[in-house]
Length: 129
Ligand SMILES: [Zn+2]
Figure 1 (cartoon, rainbow, N blue to C red):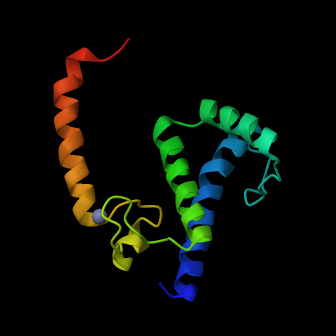
Figure 2: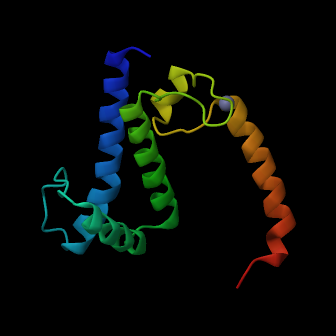
């Protein structure tokens, strides 16, 4: 993928991350914080604590999204952005434009969704307490 395009998706990803994380911070500050774009500078240790703190505050869905966004940003760093985790083929840019943090190409995702919906049906009555 062209560097210019990667940059575009990278900033889109960063915006999504700020949206998720910023939403939590806003909540904690009771709405008094207007600087949603502020991202804290965090060391490794602090990052772990921060992770735990955030995890407690975020809805599971938002948390999963955040993890996907961070994985995608990591891929940007490694020059692997836009590659499907499953089949290692290129993910169509049209798809990345809709979901910049997607991990799989359309084909693999539909396979995974098929599988997971089957799993859901099978495990519905055997969920752990
Ligand atoms: Zn794939």
